[in-house]
Image (cartoon, rainbow, N blue to C red):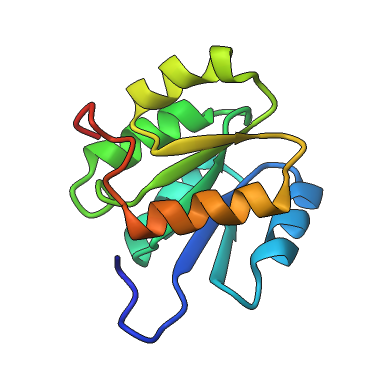
Length: 136
């Protein structure tokens, strides 16, 4: 983890829809330190600028989709170890192969179940290398 002991973990939320950013931020604020990005390019810049403990990444975005953002994060030494959870409207069968190939630790389907989201975040923060057996 990148946060110092005693600090709340820092989570970067990436989504091109402002209502999704507000919703996710509202669910997590108070427990985590939140940063937001509205594009893949902004996410890559923020992740390189300041270490994050976890990234919640929308799959479907204009210009650069979540898969490409994740691949780029995993290719860069400074961001390689950050666990990524994809936020998606796709089904598990559609999502799993591409998610793992891109280097994601996990994914959660929309609409988001707040309890499931919190559980997945806690699991990824406890075990940041989970789900990255493909070298990601």
